[in-house]
Picture 1: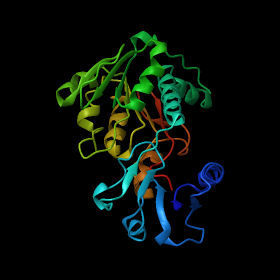
Picture 2: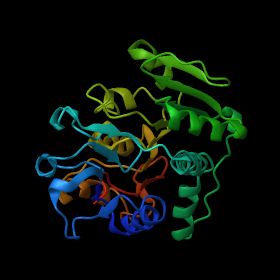
Picture 3: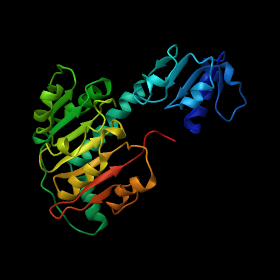
Picture 4: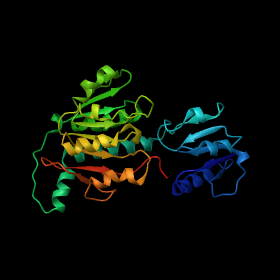
Length: 292
């Protein structure tokens, strides 16, 4: 039995060591290793191409190397191939920590203060108590509920939205298209943790983002395909939104991604300022999916 790993090489070295210690009966190879494609029974990948799948006649199981499986085009997979999503405590904990960091950075104006510090300005900003800051999560699955659990101790007014109804202690839950306007209008900080489906692709568009209160912020940790990027830039430029923390982007050309760089005063991996004559707030762009 052989497993083919096709993602980040550094991460692959860790996987190789674990397989050697815990599953020595499974041969672990990456594309640089000599191997016979006909022996590959397992594939660990983010989004394998149809051409790769076609070269693996014995493939039985496809493992996602990240949270979720919505990046796979199920229609292009052989019907007998089983798909496995990763469930690992570190993913849940890491998402909770990352989103909590992003929410607190926006809530306590850390990006604004960082910009003012670099520009040598003293720019005090009136604090808003956590109990008066409304934070909403789109997507109430395992990761969405983890984020809500992490934010609860701070006292934020929490709400959530998903396609189906949920009942979560301490969270005002909304469901379906009918519940979306009320949810959006009550979010000072909106967090997207939805899976990417035909129904959710482009859900963070101008029509919906404009339903957020004036001065609201966006945190997208779902998929790049959820966000219509130019709509976000326009609403930032117009001042309706005060900032964004972007953990994911749609794959595309360097010219298209440059629209975020052009809107900032700092490089791609640092907080970048959006121009707003009434207020300035940072937008952080961390990484692009799918990973290289």
